[in-house]
Length: 413
Ligand code: ATP
Ligand code: MG
Image (cartoon, rainbow, N blue to C red; front, side, top):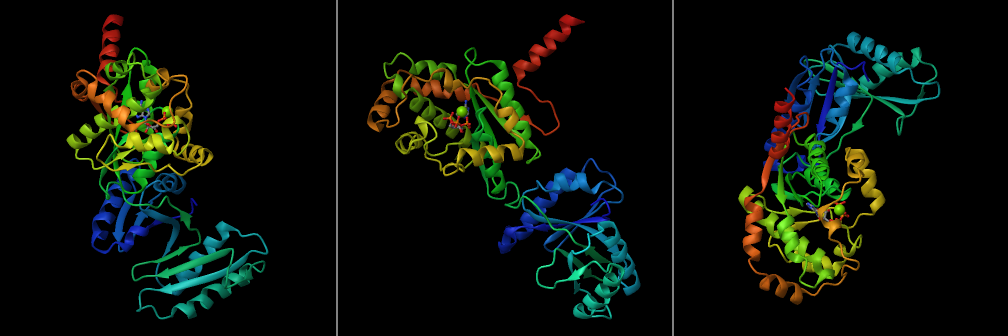
């Protein structure tokens, strides 16, 4: 692919949405600008339904890898650019075919499109004018106009003619943030980062909320979530991470003699706190990594009782997915290796021997209503929440870690 002079990026399904189109296209362009920033020679131009990335010597393969992850891009073609006159088109397409070097027996077709009507030869005529000399030079090629293995597209425009064969699939979806904002409950597990990525792909901006329980959970467990957020931020440019101290809320539930309901109560507390943060941040939904039936807290009766703790829409992108498919996705998006690190989550510590799979809403409501100072406890957790903005290539850390590191350095010198 390093033969290319230019990459042609095509927008995805959101093109259908008439009046939002221009806003969506601008969002994709902004995201593309982020990706090409480390390549100073790249030039971008936007046109109806596409973006052109002039490479000017920058590496096509690397750029395609990055651009494939931009939400809203349906496909990418590495393009060879020729002047818009017959001799030039013939010589560039011959050169192009030499680079591709198709094996004998490859089925082949040229598909020309005359966009610039001032060009003297029509599309059908150009198919023949280009294909005939190429076939003479490559006697091993077999013409197949229905479903060829190699289709050379020749797009004739006024300024230039674009010649390309490859159509590399992009990630598709909606441009980031064009469908609003949601709070993602991010644990250190496999599921919730995948749920976050799936939401982002659907055009949601996400802010992450993580609950930790010092000293029951370690600094490493929290760091893992910072690292996971950083991986997710590659798809967003930057993500806010809210770190909620959860120890006091959690310990309030122990000792009430209803151990089998502890997970239900903790999940509801998480949702209540996340709802308050959502209101503060202007988010309109909460995303979780729940998948139906995976564990006791994800049976339908549990999801029902837990879900009632928030008035916001609860989005569960993985709810109908099999674990294997979720794992595949987590490998693809780059979160898997972090997720399987063996640090404890705040919930696993308090897991009773037999968590209920069928909690009783009336009882849960009553426990919460009679727990002394419960809403103050939740408000205090919201109050003590620390927010860190995480960027793809930065090394932002929670304040207490930064302070500890600074302290260590002072001692050292
Ligand atoms: P995951 O792999 O995402 O941890 P899981 O299959 O382990 O999910 P649970 O541990 O039951 O399932 O958690 C269900 C969901 O609750 C998670 O996907 C996540 O959205 C949320 N959650 C759990 N623990 C936390 C936490 N400590 N902080 C924030 N959200 C959490
Ligand atoms: Mg988990």
